[in-house]
Image 1 (cartoon, rainbow, N blue to C red):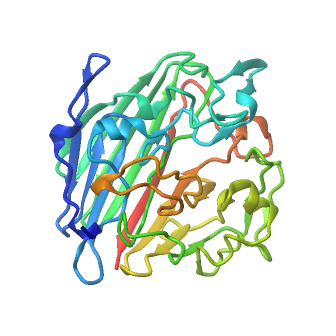
Image 2 (cartoon, rainbow, N blue to C red):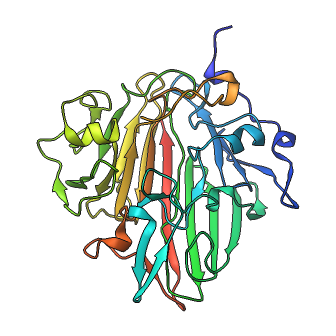
Length: 355
């Protein structure tokens, strides 16, 4: 049977309803008046799918997901998860805060990644759906959870607008000085999941600079210009045009897996834009964050069976993770990720779709 990504239907909510650790998980559907709908699970706050019409009016699934919570729980690549307390990498799983040293779980080579072994993507969030287009998720993370100080309360609100925007608002408070860096880790294929690689997607990123990394993908501390390198996406370019270039940074990441230092933009100006070459679906990203991790699915292994029976083979999706810079707690010249008692961590990201 030929796989047809436009024929994928919304997963059965019963397949996401399980009791884990004494709590029940749920799948929520948000719908708008334009014919778009998305799915979010209280387990990990996963954005498990987004469906909208392409240029021919065919309903197309543009975010990779899974048919049930068991398959979602088996994968280790954060497909659509809320990751935290600290998205991206912290070198050697160590940092110092207010003179005290903290040690985190090592789960990515010699580093700590996305908050540790039992990070926010493994937690069951409290969920409230106040209306058909909004979902509010809340999580309490106790002091020293995965090695991070402070009792932290995080709230993530998903809203689907009638303009085909997925608005994600993040908030967090703490009773002790800590570090916070939250993001969503959705994997996109704008031609439709299961439609092949994303190398002919056209991408544009409003970043004149990026943070080069060492062989363990930790920033070296340099903030380097993209001009004259394969990382120059100031003007629209195919993802695959330079991904195989003889470039040390690309070899370290096996492709693009780098933080872009975003240019200052107005509230109504996207920091990134991607267009699916077959579907004509355009994704624009808006954020108030200083960085954007562009990842081209280089380490997708094909070991996971995604929705519709399709394997998650390499470079069949990309991620655009709005964030602070990797390893910021250990790099004093990077924007601060410190959150103190009495302060509110507050940030917003918008994924806007059109054709």
